[in-house]
Image (cartoon, rainbow, N blue to C red):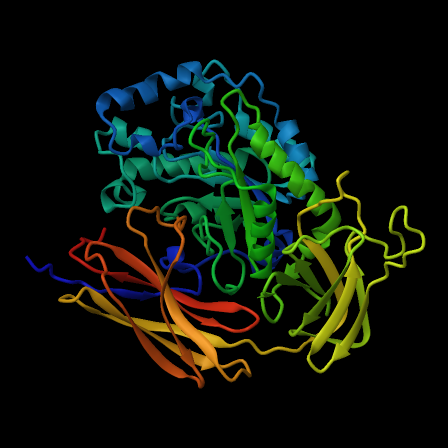
Length: 545
């Protein structure tokens, strides 16, 4: 049987495909959003009763049989006893790592409440460890000068189970707006959190924010609602800078919650690279940890935070209070710009490795010096190379027709073996933009059911003062992913070369008629590759929720 093809193209804000359905009427204050953007780096904490078994947080209940579900709700609380819980250790490590705000999972989808609530008996106060963990965590982080935020799930699997509704997400039947009892429970719980736990700077609503965000703003008008009011891509960094405030959240490994097996952690350097790329594109990074069931952090997570801590001790100036530069990067050099100054930070990835005591030369095409320009290396005084008094390590620069030429030495002895592998940051003051990047737009697609081929369409809007550019498309199948999850990589699609602006179209064959594809156009300049806005294409007979 030839399937009937339904093709839906949704234009999404650039790089934020998961957030196309943001409700209107945000009451986030503009000045608070700008303050949020200045912070730049937050800590996410996923922790709940099911951390005891190392299972994916809450989601194992979706589709589970009655025996498993009953054991989850009845038995797990009886053994949850985090006897090594000492949030002051988490908070002091977070401060060392340069974390400026924290978001704690007060209630995930399972419905298990991590605070002293009057609304249900499925929570921390009905365990062998009857302490208000939310209060203790928020107070510990505030004591370190870290701003407090809460994660809250409007979905509640415990409530669904109590009311004999199959546990699942993202369909109308389980939404709070269609279940008055669940809506009342959520509102009561949100009211407890927003009135009994001091100043809540951030609220992350992982689900339908209907009524809940308005209650949060009503009770605390200065709170910033992130997910539910701004773009919050999950497990990916958008291809281009997004407008205004946005936040991406990432795991250190593959799991949000503690997972003792089948885990593969990112290196500390990869975490730093994520922070750099996110800030270069104007977003905040919300980096996740998942404490063990006894309350300690896994050593792998602690080690990575300490590696980040050293890098931030040296280079935090390029992360806080910055905005995107004229372009995000020139190959392996990424840029941020001081918000209210003509200061650019060139964040140099060590590819190849920059040996301590070695000179490196760079030519920047996007930066032009002025009479007042000065050059320095963050963390270095520019006068001393240890044990080498005959060496003058002062960085130099000169403006030439082909770009800004920089010469700098890495002198900082950050590790005994002098093989510090992470980015070195050049600070360049009083500069001007010297580059016009190319621009590309993703315009649409047309699907041919008979051949299972899509014609993808884009427009090259600006050549960026270059004679020839490569343009093309990339795509990915997002079936089975959470609403904001984009953990799978892009696949490279067809490409072609253009010598003038204008529309272009390329064919993508052999598509799965049951898939849901995201795709975007891209343009490759000698300095960088820029992606256009993402769109979504649905092929095949698939009922919409």
